[in-house]
Length: 117
Image (cartoon, rainbow, N blue to C red; front, side, top):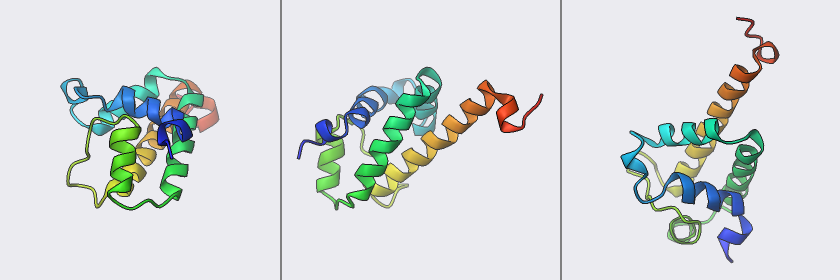
């Protein structure tokens, strides 16, 4: 299976977010993810989250998942030891994307979120 074809938005996200020198521009993963959320549209983030959910649902085991993420999906970063495994890291990315997407939506439309100033 070509994961880059099955998950094109996730491929784009990894390639653009966790490229070989991403740590030169961001102090941590959350900072890199936040920038992506704030510089792209809601539909892109929704599509990335959808791809993440589908990849996680495959319940691939290491090393196949590592090969899929690091080789086929264009991620030049292997998550550090704070994660149990790649699936744990993928869930963390999804949760961080959701958090910043909700934050951005609330800032763009404060009345819808109940924040009236």
